Picture 1 (cartoon, rainbow, N blue to C red):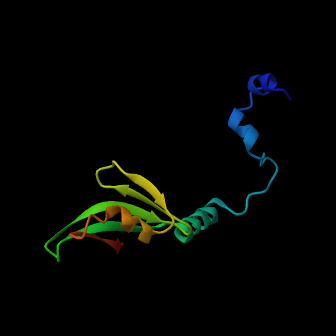
Picture 2: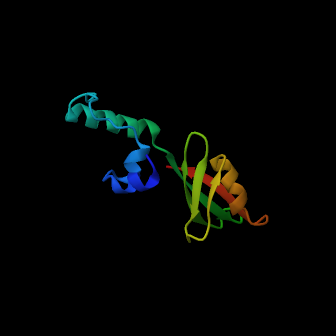
Length: 110
């Protein structure tokens, strides 16, 4: 099938990228499937954390960024929204939020 035929056949273009499930039986009823989806979400949910900065020796502090820790990496977004990055681990995010010797970053897990 050439590209012109694909675009004019009435099949949505994205459907061409996904195997057609027509004819496959459902795994279970809707209620049980909802439970399975909830368990999937619970089992794979990222852990939330904050990067907090300590000024001096407990003189002051602030939340500098929020992050989500996945199994193989972490996503971190500064509270100002100016900085967003992917790091191998939440601990690696601390490097970005250290500022000299007077501002020390900490991970705070939720």
